[in-house]
Length: 280
Image 1 (tube, rainbow, N blue to C red):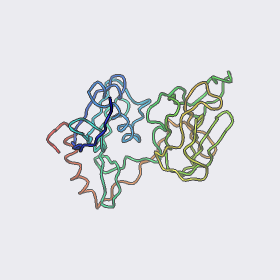
Image 2 (image 1 turned 135 degrees about the vertical axis):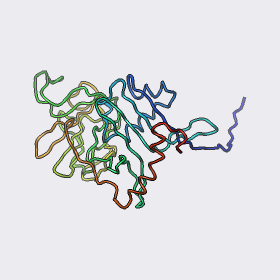
Image 3 (image 1 turned 60 degrees about the vertical axis):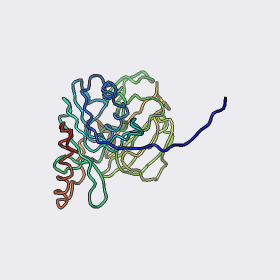
Image 4 (image 1 turned 90 degrees about the horizontal axis):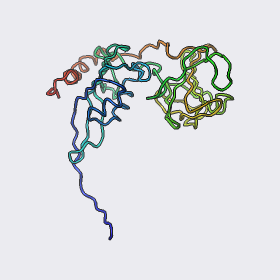
């Protein structure tokens, strides 16, 4: 009738595997049907965050492939490691192919086959997964009941969903902002500001620097909101801009002196991504 606990050594092994799926309803469900842990979708969204908006770009029939580390404990999948390569081939996005590369200066990032950086000044979305419930432009306000300009994009998501900073910057304010409820406003380079409204809580404070993909708060329904969602807006020169139409340039490519090393390192990853299972 008693319970006893004990420790035993567990053998961890790491394999590099190719995962490929054709998307029907969602990437999450497609991975699940393929026998993979659907949480791999979160890693994919992280790697492809600068090129694919998983809220509006995904179409039935799109394909995604990844070369990813799988960590096993006593022969059972424990977790995924690093995504070494990823490719998304979609009707709305075209083909996006990225490779993970650790440069000789110690900085690791993702690049396309020509060494162009995957990173842009802004991510395509401040949330990993959500649905766009209202777009930029005039609309009938769901609470106030009359037509007014909707100066951002609304993303429906469960309460507490983490919100990313779309770019490096500084927290201009983090507090109550009238109908926007709990709001974070970030100041970025080149005169841009991004606004995140209706939060349930904050993860940053005014005056602090933030990095791209840093969690700044959590989805809520504070202020004039009929349900949990994130209202996301972009301003420049005091004018609101359509976040879905921003064209943000990429960051610096791989230094020319490192290109030969880069090409050599990604060669087996490219082969693996294309289905040569013996490539690594």
